[in-house]
Image (cartoon, rainbow, N blue to C red; front, side):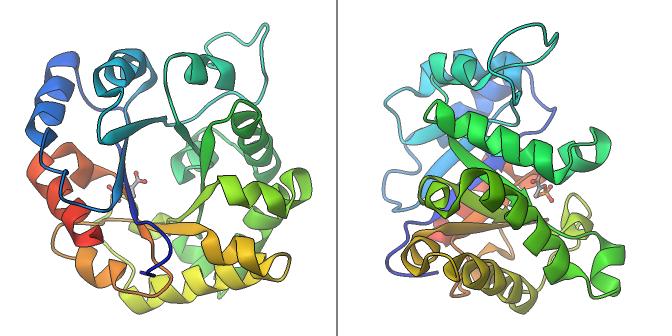
Amino acid sequence: MSNTRRPLVAGNWKMHGSRAENSALLEAMTGQLDKLQAEVLVCPPFVYLAEIAGRLAGSRIAVGAQSLCAESTGAFTGEVSAAMLKDIGCQYVLVGHSERRSLFHEDNELVARKFVAAQSQGLIPVLCVGESLAQRQSEQTFDVIRAQLDAVLALAGIAAFARAIVAYEPVWAIGTGLTATPEQAQAVHAFIRKHLGTQDAQIADGLRILYGGSVKGSNAAELFAMADVDGGLVGGASLKAAEFLQICAAAG
Ligand code: PEP
C-alpha cells in the first residue's frame, strides 16, 4: 500500500441479500468506519441499488453496481444502462467480473465497451482482470491480463485509467477459499502498473489496484501491506459486517 493512493475496500454482494438482510448489514456498519482513512464501497444487486443509494447518500459508504449494459438506451430487455445507475445515485460499477466473463460470456471487447459506457455517465468503472487456474499453471497469467487491459486501452485510451479502478482477481481464488499469496498478488499488481506505465507513468502510479479472491479478516492485512495492493474487492466476507469491517480496518 502506498502513501499517495487512498485505499479502497469494495464489497461485492453478488446475488445475495434481502431488504431485511441488507438493512441489518448496513446498520451494523454505521458509525464503524469513521476513523478509517480507506474509502468503502458496497455493490448490492440491481434491485436494491436505489434504496441503498438513497439510504447511504452523503454517508461514509459509496455505492456501486455489479454490472451494466454497454448500450445507452433502447430494446435491451433486462438490461440496465449507465445513465440509470447514475440517476439513482451509483458512483461505481464493476466491469468484467470473472463471473460475468465466464457465466455470461462477456469477452474483452464487451468489457471494454462497458468500461466506456460507465465513464460516459461519470461512473467509475472497477475493471476486473484475472487468470484461471489452467492459465496460471501454463504460465499465461501475464499474457491474459495484458490482453484484458489492452482491450480497454484500445477503446478507452490510457487517460481513462485516471478515472478508473482495476481489480486483480485470480479466478482460482474467487469464492474458493484459496487466496493468492501476498507475493503472487504483488507480482501481478506490479505487472499491471508497469504495463499501464509504459503509456503514462503518472496515471499508472496514481491508479488504485485492488486484490480480490477470498480476502478475509485474517489475510487482509498481509495482502494490503504489499506495495502495489491498494485495497480489496471482497465477495463472501463482505456479507458479514464484523469481518468486512475488519478488512476495512486492515486497509487503514
Ligand atoms: C468477488 O466476488 O469478487 C470475490 C473476490 O469473491 P470472494 O471474496 O468470495 O472470493
